[in-house]
Length: 242
Image (cartoon, rainbow, N blue to C red; front, side):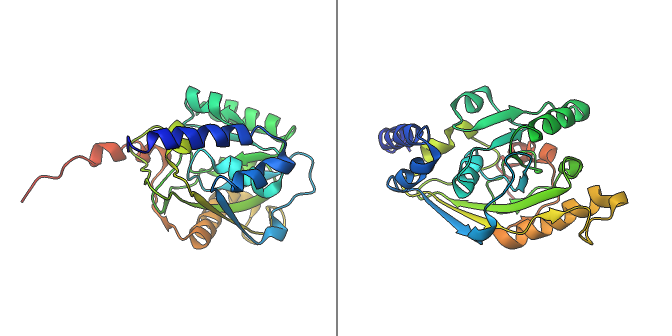
């Protein structure tokens, strides 16, 4: 790991400079540094809305919003719970911190959604393993049109875990040839689709989206919530013999 640090810092610094460039030119240049981003159904990776589009995605790394911004060729704002001050400062996209207070978070999301295109991660935190955490239903109360997107990533050298490590170090340890894949599907209309019965949308929609994200990204539903994932480190200790 220590042998990689000089090269890792260099690549991280170069990529950090590139992402500050205008949207039209920064992503083609980013490919020259070894980053590869694949898009499934690119015709759906677009929106005619100047603001107010809501993208619901699984959460792999702190760079997920940057990947979505690349696919849409536009600026996005993301909201997250487990957001460190370092990640908030260093992030090349705008991030908003959630407080776990239902009323305050709902007011913040509605305010942002009226101003910008918003990315939400219903899992509540990143999950590096091929599993999907249980989705929070709060995103179903924000908009009647939701754009579902599945994200998968692969680091060329190191393997990140959910339990240990700083998320702000993601850009440093992605390696020389990081790969991201995105799967875009048609917008989900909560007023017109059969899956969305108005009286139970906060139950049916998260279940439907969870099944779709697992199918597209190849994950397995875990049934664990954001709070459960925080306990993983406790159970990763050495197992007793015998």
